[in-house]
Amino acid sequence: MNRRHFLRLAGLGMLSTGVARFHLKGQSSIRDTPPNLVLIMADDLGYNHLGCYGGEKIRTPHLDKLAAEGMRFTQAYAGCTVCAPSRATLMTGYHQGHASVRGNSGGIPLLDEDITVAEVLEQGDYHTGCFGKWGLGDARTTGVPTRQGFDEYLGPLDQVHAHFYYPEYLWHNEEKYPLTGNQNGRQEQYSNDLFTEFAMDFIKRQPENEAPFFCYIPYTIPHTELLVPEDSLKEYLGTFPEEPFEYQGHYAGQEHPHAAFAAMITRMDGYIGQIVDLIDSLGMRENTLVLFTSDNGGQRSGAGVDLEFFKGNYPLRGWKGNLYEGGIRVPAIARWPGKIAPGSFSDQVWAFWDFLPTAAQLAGVRTPDGIDGVSIVPALFDRAVLEREMMYWEVYRGGDVYQAVRMGDWKAVRHGQDEPTELYNLRIDLAEKFNLADNYPDLIARANRLFKGSHTEPRPQEEPDAPGDRRYR
Image: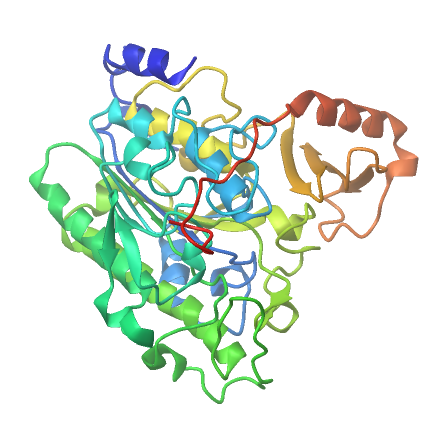
């Protein structure tokens, strides 16, 4: 079903069943109004950076509280090992074998025919806003958020632009939004502060509307650069052993890289506390699902990031950029008081491409035909684990395709289409230490069939023209 056909059918209205039916454990089936949806996403945050996932060095009291009030997922997966492809799966419901954006160069746009979660939610009259790193189309392309179903946007469109925490401008809808405090080398307007400010303003305006809302807040923290305002940095000065920051590429950093990295995450944690407190103060607490996650696993090194020191992906193998668990398994927390049991956890295996059908079921609206995702609503309410035949990931490396597939407890990985396939049992070997490929030739054969059947050749992954020597508009 292409975009035009889908939107025409969507005009017929909500599903015949009206809004979604939810079944709460121990209660009879009830009918609810569609919830507000708030999706908050970190950038390069590892599975173990948060206190509620076992991290011991970085203070995250608000996210820990969010987990205590809701559900913590232990087997949630990003859409890819790197930024833009992962975000493409989140927005469209397709895994990387089928998604239109597979390159990670910065500004490859979604196509006009792509159907995003924002467009799906339009069927339910949702007000939609995105505030933060987009990464799915630079200015004046088909990928701009306001051309993909969002009513309002503020942030850096191209993800290379997003690497700078004190940019001279952002994009507000489709116009440049100058940051006068960052002109002439000054650093007065921290980009993530503005994402939070605009997101909170968007939420504050919603009680005036009768319709529900979807607010997507993709922070750039803790992606390098390692820069944070001094009021946050001072909380960690003297806490960790430090080595001098080493400049790499265009990534700037502060003199105390360990303190800066920890302070960035704690500052983001503070934003989330503000947003959740606002939702509660506006009387939206019991009709708002807040979901937090990360776009991929923690970065290994570079520009002061120290994954080993912080044990950011522990106990997983690997890091951002590869297909071991450390590259794709991510923290995920869901809070919805009165619907999701406080202090609960779920072993449900799900990935970013499941978000679109989950949001659609909660909103009681149509899901596009043929997508790869499935709704995990039952796991939210009944704690029932949905069995998945398989989950598939791929990432482009040096002109080749690296692939991974999960089949129940089994995980197969190959580092190129002509390379041998590795096999791990995640139930007994979460760290992927023991390659069992030689012991299970039937599973290797199955994985190789799934690799071939799940991958389609992508359309050309082309960047739009940019002015001068810049990579973005």
